[in-house]
Length: 212
Image (cartoon, rainbow, N blue to C red; front, side, top):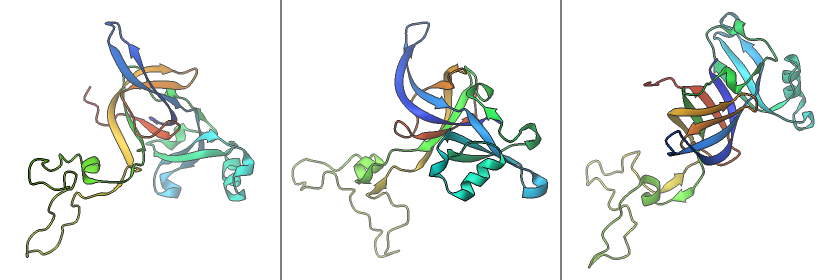
């Protein structure tokens, strides 16, 4: 199982052996606990459910509390199901840390919810250049321009790049370098930025399309 949940703590920079600045994101990754095991014979597929970030039992309903009680695990705020090849390798209540998932020098895929920007114009949302601001142009500098398609088909095609809601979507950044892993404190540093604001929850996986 090469997946773990984490919390984005923020960004900083470190310096390598050649004194080059490397921007990194610090993530508090794990530990997570196994709260459910699914097998192909009973559930139709093989997977485990992992829980992250403990919370007080008074904040969960009785059904949720009973679910965690079956695995003898305190209630947690976030739950994710992960497909595995052999679910018999895991036990209910088992604790998994960042050291069991990633190591320095590996590449990781990080998934999170991007920052919500609200309703945005075409230039901000789709990186449009904008229209000219020379003689004869009225106040249309940030407008997207004509969107029609003549009498045929007499409609606007779906997916046309127009103003609208921006951000707040699931984003995955792939092949990020794992710069440093602190297994004792369950902290990992990955090169570059990751989706979401500080405090947001991230899903980290060993890169599935790593090119080395």
